[in-house]
Length: 466
Image (cartoon, rainbow, N blue to C red; front, side):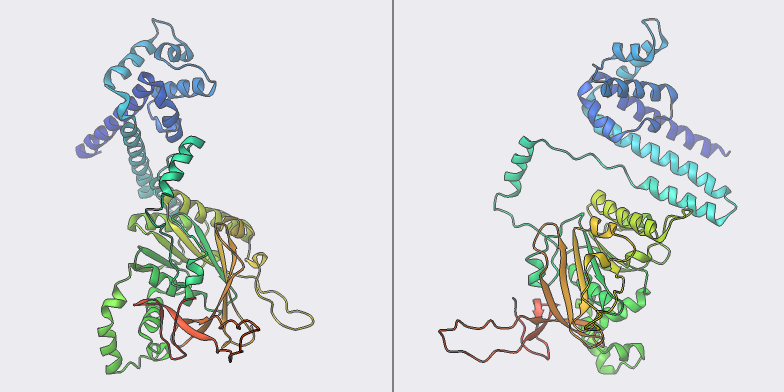
């Protein structure tokens, strides 16, 4: 081994020893630090055997509800005054000047352990002679980079104080905006929530998700992970919608000089959103999490959930795989505070024996696993009013909403050539019977995420909020 590597190993080993000593010394000096340390540190984090035994002794006493001090810990370790443990424990307290920095010691320990494990896995990766073994090691390396979260808890007294602070009326809550007032008024999506957008094939899920992501990208960092399309195809669809430019012309490479001039004028609007389009084929949930954390995404779109690859080396049924993926996505959001919007295919139902029609989707139609329904905070269903008519208006229904109202729906006109969903505003309500009746106004159609606000005038009528 080169001298430089030996020196580097020595430095890392010393850092790990210092961090272990700081954590244990803090626990011995101040027993009040023990609960917090135990929630963040595991016995396998202590590479030094004597330190691991000390940690296990403290852990055992804490779990048994017994007092913790150096003498009692020494007795648990099985030694008297003349035991070697006496000098070891005393040495730990001597090198730890104060327990006030215990959080820093824990952070240093976790960082040192992670780096040490990565170096070990890196050595194994360099020696791997099969692709499957190398991929499994890469998964382990990504898992090492996902830090163990702090345990967040509060008692009722603290909860009341936090309630008053959060609801003092001085600050307006910031929820994810969908660009559609009826959705913004009912869906209170926060960091860490999981939203599922389900639909039958070819109903426009990807186009609607891109429209949402483009608008959300104005105020948040958004990553769009696609298992269905390449990033270039997604960008073409985004340009078509944002510039109101024929998608057919784009695909046939028939843009005119006027089209290019319009695109140059729209360049600031097209490049303003903090939206990244990612080719996700072959990526696991762990890959998505590692990439998202590295790029600090606030919101992640996944198109679509059932296409996410299972962890390498695992053999599961389709039901087990999708269930595990759904749970992993939810935990990824909870742990990192990332809002996850996952698209989901639906199982195609049988036609009604009498009407011969395909019914609107229900929660049990979420394909492959009921776990998706359980994990999601919000479930939206997109479907055609008439399944057999591709030009039919689309219905977006709030099928599940943990924090607000459900069962409401919004009607859209979908223009496939412009990749645009335009909201059909509710009809004007009929006046009271005692007043003269007026002619009913036709439905209005408006698109959302326009530059001036949620709505935009369209060729089909003037827009407005509902």
